[in-house]
Image 1 (tube, helix red, strand yellow):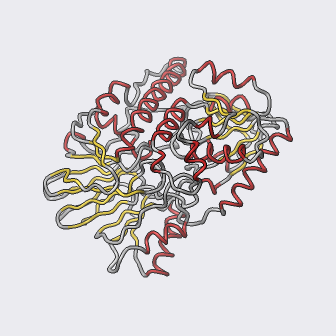
Image 2 (cartoon, helix red, strand yellow):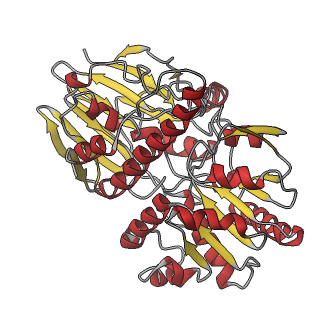
Image 3 (spheres, one colour):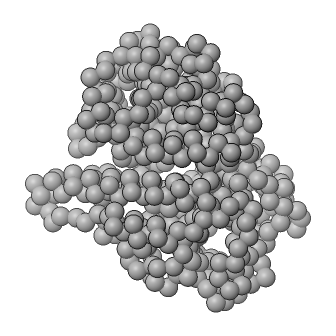
Length: 463
């Protein structure tokens, strides 16, 4: 009898990690990094992998986001030498994501060690280094959507389009005469770039995300109206706009919408900066994969055969640190998009440190903010926050635009789940906070008479 152990994203949103043990094999589905820990006390020595990496036969990654893949280099650092399976496009994105992650981890530890030295504490080591990432990348194997492959004797794998970010996959996995489906992160059907998630009709076991299981997003029209109003208010107040954004997916959606406003003559800011080396590199991957875009805007697809600047000519990419620092000298009229999306790292923290205390600054929160993150504290109305070791007063205007989320809302999750034929698969809800999971669980039971389990972290179930 096979079994599955839920090591991450169990009654929480980040850190996806599920160990599947069949009669003959041990497979790791996802190897994600948790987000929301205290940035001032990074403890890389913590036991983040509660299993022996050398006993794993294969690893499957649904998409490139760090909360699904961010500990894969640590897996390799600790002895894993098997294959890492993902979509072909994720193979293009992963080197960008993980090299940047390694660099930031090393910088974070450098900052922490300076404080620890003053406090008389021993120095820390980073979770992993660029060398670990280079070893990891030699193990990556990409599959195209719809390609079914035997990855181990008696184990077959196929990815379907999840519509969440470029290359995101729904996982179909066959073993021991059974089929397991993992939704990965299902995309918001309002995405201006990507196709809607593929519908799956059959499975024996289903792991389904529930990030927005308790609510729907605002309509696309209402979200875009709020977006334009926030940008216009920043111009009226004479300040800049800061947008924390995930480098993969959210950033490119924002560039699309800003470009649409520019094309229509409705963008009042005269400077848009993508202040993210990772976001810039990812945007270049998007340029090379326009075949995966939907057909909603043929003019955009045609212009994107050139560059993003063709679509949004006031856009500037800032790769070098000196260019990023220079942005703090711009007093008004600029939109600055920077990572990370939950404000847990990256350049956005520096911009927030220099601008949160200004009343004319506007901060646009355009994605999910996990509990404990700096972004969540801003959404929850914190008056003071700690950034890079300093207390900063929050006087800027904080806007929350949930409609830009790259995750499916509650109705979209239900519509996707309804596609499964009866008898419906055994269902486990993952990747959600307890409140949202419980709401979705009740709706599934009430409308579809479908019982859903909500496993705790570390819980094992026979499948």
